[in-house]
Length: 403
Image 1: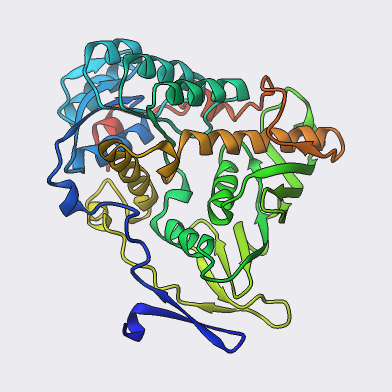
Image 2 (image 1 turned 135 degrees about the vertical axis):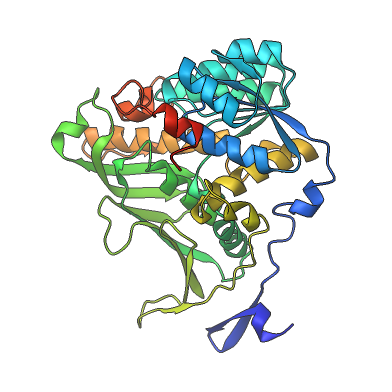
């Protein structure tokens, strides 16, 4: 193996060699996917984000965008024309009853996700995906996960950074022990919207460490965000999360010195900060850490991102969808997904537990939570969508003309 295909970490006098091909089996390639039968896909909710999902499914060689359910009449018409879809519906139940679909991707505001997921599950589709936050009430997230588990439906999450190709490769390296035993973790910037954007931190932390959060001790500010019925806008959390591996993860609402997740191992540290994870040599306990080129292997679906409206930084959306499509095609369990509905539920549970602990002055809260009726409302935009809160998408934008 040439040095151009290795990452060299100097550690305690013995070099650690990491193959640049250590991503085998994570995703099928476009060439492999091209030989498959096309799965029929229905999109529920074709607003701004739903249109990106539709674009990825339209470009994938093994999926066919077959149906759209969109509540807004004008948008439904123009989006149908844009994506050349004739099977158009106002509501999800009507779509899943009328069309024989393999996959249903649900990209609605959070308030409407549960009903759409349950309708698709009852219709017997093979795969369902939804997005963040999965619910406000923990019991609603449970109902979705359990409905899919009961019917052996692949239940995927959506547009989460943990699906980024390089993050998945970094996690595989960390969890394989390539950098030695995991010794610590920290989360920075857990605030602002802990059930929305903050779910990214929990999802990445769980991926990189291979562990669940089992205890939460948290303090929150400002005081007005700690009202039991307040949504999570502006809520900042400092505290400690105990992981099932026995590690304590320190949590900070502030975004300095970085915003994201850092996981430390005996010979290296990996830091995710809303981009491809950085790799640092050594523990950093006695000297400044040196950043090292992690030599990530190329993302096999990068070519899909070369043509607008998709952008190069949509790579984690593409990776999430491709992992989902692979699972449905190959009969893989939901646990194999880059992002699963279970991942979204775990992020919500950590957010709820953090607020409960903060309200109660930092009391230790054990997870899983016994009270599944606990609720944390997301922002009005995430809960109700742009149309309801004065940020509607124009018809011109929905048609793709303004891009």
